[in-house]
Amino acid sequence: MKHMELRLTVNGVAKHWTIAPGDILLDVLRREGYFGVKRGCETGECGACTVLVNGKPINSCLMFAAQAEGAEILTIEGLAKPETLDPLQEAFLDRGAVQCGFCSGGMILAAKALLAHHPHPSEAEVREALSGHLCRCTGYRKPVEAVLAASTKKRPARAKAAEVSR
Amino acid sequence: MFEGVEAFYRPTTVREALHLLRKAKGTARIVAGGTGVVPGGDRSVRFLIDITRAGLSYIRKRGGAWTIGATTTMAEIEDSAEMRMLAGGLLASAAAACGSVEIRSMATVGGNMANGSPAADLAPPLLALDAEAAIAGTAARRKMPLADYLAAVCAGKMKNALLVEIVFLEPSAARGGWCFQKFGRTAVDISLVNVAAGLQLDARGRVKWARIALGAVAPLPLRMPAAEALMTGRILDRALLAEAAESVSDTVHPIGDIRASADYRREISRVLTGRALEQCAARAGYSL
Image (tube, rainbow over all chains, first blue to last red; front, side, top):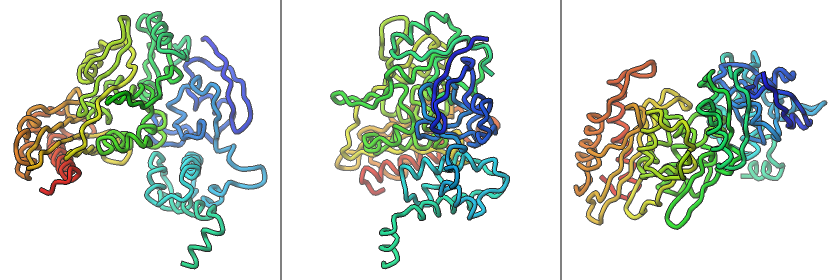
């Protein structure tokens, strides 16, 4: 088996790993201890393996690890600050949008990417953003509510006040 | 799954990619988004050539012709302000209909064509736009009609060639309308049938030309020349739309598989073609 070097940034930390040329990104991330990246269908249908690569949500089960050379990767482990959860994580907890948790990491990262570009999405936009994520426990209503709640929470105070006065 | 892979290359030019492809003598696979190659799981692959750094991600207009680089992603097409305008957003809406957000930030137009799937969502719109494929191979770079390229892929004749870009002319917008329709079980499903249609009318409501292409209803995505011809020169009305849709359902020869029976796909072809043409008429500003 031949090997190659891979240099990338994961959750803000520079990494230098030795991989096989045919390695899949999902396998490498889990091998390196990022177990929040879930192995689900391995065919790009369930979204459990979603990570952000340079800010874009991708299925890590469909990407060769070697393609991540030089990339910045965010996994669910990198979302919270040491003491505080991300507002999306808070919202998922508040709304009971997490049951077994297997799909949650992927969903939250997909939502993170959505909110980065559309801070105040409509429900339809949230549903579209989560359409690549299968949940087998709670269903989709609560995750959708959670993302909408997180987007409202982030709204600047002035915008909120304007809404109230309307 | 890809334990047999000996090397992963990331060429920065098309020339370098071709050199690597030639050197591998049929044991290499070109990779872009990975959404086709990875689930394919071809264990015979010894070399992977990632072309996403070869400078082929662009949407450009030169003169009246649009050029889309092979590694342009579905998301880039979907989000492109120009593609949202062109032909009533025909290509942008087809790109947006393809898989999930995650898939669309990986999958590329080149992969969608080179993969040879009869259900490829960008194939009917590109066929309807009379697109050409620019190919680099052992010989000089050449252009061929996209339909010929897809047929060659299907026949296994494109293994040593690299799809570089897709080229098509900007269609006339006057009294014209375009529409993409897809039918699948869910929002992220592979198309059971997909349709792209376009038409242009004269001042009296006569059809100047019609373009209809369908996917997932034959081994290859197909244009529907019989239906197009029967519409040309006639006044557009509901009877003509029904006639064209009927002609399409007579022309398609779908398979029956785990996703849908052949009869069902044929019926869906008729219904979707009708809907697409009706939308085209509406977008052309014509009331039926």
